Length: 301
Image 1 (cartoon, rainbow, N blue to C red):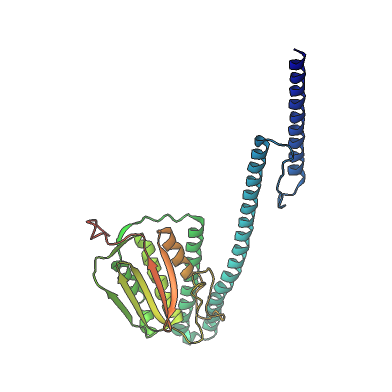
Image 2 (image 1 turned 60 degrees about the vertical axis):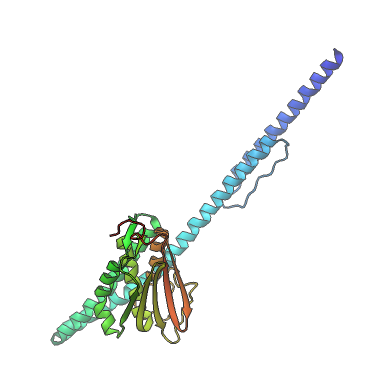
């Protein structure tokens, strides 16, 4: 009986010791969390034994690490936003200053009114395009532009985009060469987004390419190819980066968001945009997640 009593007292003492150790550990963890700055690379450790304490410590450390990652992402987005606004502000001021300058010339030389008004119109058109790109890219980044994807015929929005750029293509001396082996090719895509992708790629070819523009449509995707301007070879690994410009002089129009928008739209349609350089040509390829609805007995817009 005495032995049982001694064992019971020993067990009770051990339990009280472990309880005190747990309490001390909890108090110490609370103190560290209260006194350590939020930006610290703090990681808690456990002195008291036992799986419950270790489990709690691991859970707290995971939550702390997640908080650090979120703060880093927020800071990174803030830096990117400041950089974007600085670059876009430069691009917006350029056409705006040009339009203002010609307005002043119009007041001084009214006899040149028709010519100056045309130039002002072009400058304001450039400004409108820049603002449109910025607004669209911002909506894509914030997730406030839901896409309605379904099996969509590839060629009709491509025809519309080429028709929209007819004058610019003709003025630039670029002849589009469209190649396809059948007209009923369809992909899983949003029709409006697909048209925007085509327009951005055509505009990119006009601004940065030389020679004719080749567009190939196959069951595996769409490929835009054009010769690269001499001395302006872009980095295919960076060409879809936001604000990337192959020409450091930034004198060929655009805000460097066109191809970034192409990539964002493709990814939101579960597709992929990639680029490579081959035999002096820049090839931009669009890969879609599904295609050829006609072969599957479906229908496409």
